[in-house]
Length: 408
View: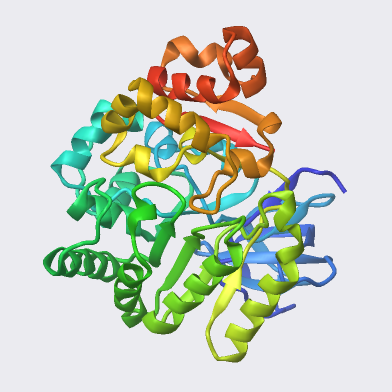
């Protein structure tokens, strides 16, 4: 069988049939992988009005016939943690995902493209986000409608980001919301759920998400539970405090009365590899209690994040400009260098946990730094004649952003 696959979105799975009929489309002779975990099988597929109406040995005629002999025919794949939020605005054809068979992009791991206020809009524009496109939306639903109006090849859906709601009301401050702020945050979540969001997403190792308490997340999750939505989370720790972070997710699910998904479950750092059995035990105990707790993984041994994941959250409070100003203070820089290179349980240092020698630099905002793309941090540090940690700090200062890295 050829590696090339013919991908279909199985919107409606019809019963097998052999009755003669007239169809809009017949796909014949393909090998079907239906996603149910069984063995592939050969069958024909009949389509009327963009819906599958029959699968089997189909007799009849069609306006169009595709001979799929030698091809795999499968449901459209779901990119359940998509960061195509900007790239689809720049180019809605989505060629990188469509050609891999992805037909649904799901956004909202911690951050979502709405709701945004004027300060957030200005931050996006100053950072050159969305390829300079006009940021005409304010709510999450308006963003999704913006994509539809522009025309995109994939279907799209989104969680509402707990971080985005926090930024909307509190900004980048390291503090709890007031009672009034929390009520407004809940109202924003309710509005998004009313307009079609599929749930609430958090990514708790990053500032300002790190500043949110469990109680704050429970209050937002309660709103989502009213709409039978789901809480998804990049856990507060994937390393030294992994088990405590899973306990937090279970608590949010229990008290928020909401299903919960552990996003990209992993045991970061060799010293945490032996926690897998305890992770499974916690999840299965929660399931036995009646909670809907699930998890997903990715099938490779690397993760992609920003260089902000190498620094403690306190230095990032207030947003990028405040962060950059602190990095340029010699006293703060000296303290920061020590914290970046010292193992701790107080915050999630993915750089140390993943092995500092495996950091690949993959994205920059500053064109003058883009020649480093594809180089390791060690290579860039050697070229600059500075330590790895100092190089990280300098790159964040020079790039005007947190940069993107790929840790193996």
